[in-house]
Length: 521
Image 1 (tube, helix red, strand yellow):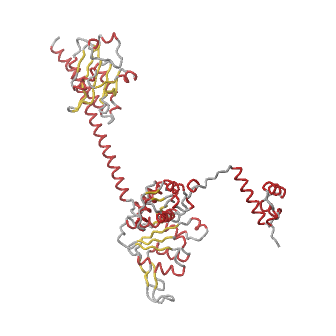
Image 2 (cartoon, rainbow, N blue to C red; image 1 turned 30 degrees about the horizontal axis):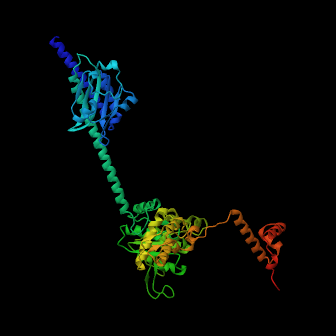
């Protein structure tokens, strides 16, 4: 061969090789997830190198197995069968040793196991197998292998060199993927840590509960506490609205300033204006000296208007002015006093119904309802019942110099099955009672009030059938009606809404004597 021809062939080979490597580089850059692109890498190798089949196998460090991640020229079943252990077969030896292996004729190599079963007996005579490790430093991640037809003109050493370069590119892509996954995991862990930190930071220390409903309340408290926005806390009686108000104030920038509470329902209408805004000396009978009102005492801090739905229309007008203008006058005074006070209101009443009835002012409602927070009833916080019960048992144990070590299972069942119309306040009262009654460091079911008792715990499980129970009830109703009518069957039948004939049949059936209900003269 002429020197010029040899040079041209070498140049063409190098150009083809560079073209392949560039195309593989672009393919690997398309996605961080190697699974999206490795099949395309093998397709490029097949078209540029004359590769009949090719595989990329990766080592699973947890199981010690070497599995096919991607393949060219293999069916899904053949890929599934291509599984190796370290040191097993040519692929297993390459991964174990970290050195490439070349088999010129796979039919003559006993270490070539052909686990996939993809090569026919006739093919094996003419197939060469090349396998190179995919390495990062000294760590072997897997192997890149290829089948190609054996020919004297084929330089297998050149194929080993080229495939080693490709394997190194795959290793770099795997390393990048590993770094991205590690960074994602780090960010996920950091995000979870921050969420837990924020949850702890904004979990009010004075409120017990980890239910989903209460977590939503904590989130609202965290959002509103730092500002000066007016808050309206709504919920049934006994749910802990005042505790939410405390949490907002003591997590705010006003925490060092006064927190003044006003129960609007407890103050008579004749004195509530004086209580809220103060009065001047001599402004009314009994006003012997000047007195500051709650708004003035709360200057710079927070005023908590509990049961705000019970305010009279006249007081609503005066409160509206404070909310709008941030100023007021004492009763009997003319001096305008500026008010730097955050208002938190609470109510268990349906304000929307009060609006429709004309009892509550629309403009005051909109001033108060800037940032509403709904405190869920205890029946919607099932997972919090035991937390609260444990908290109250510890609290009242200390208060009564007693030790309560546990709550019995029957007592727990009673607590969990009750509907709690009085909410947390009712639970607190019941636990206090149970702590006082306990004599063996355990809260038992019989320490709880009769309203919580179940039929099983109290030994009152009904034993009769439905028919017998209905008959007993019918007998009692007829006897009661006859008693009320002083034995007059006609009057008793009308009271029960049945005919006199039916009354007579029932009286006979149950052996009731109407005469015994007649008044004796």
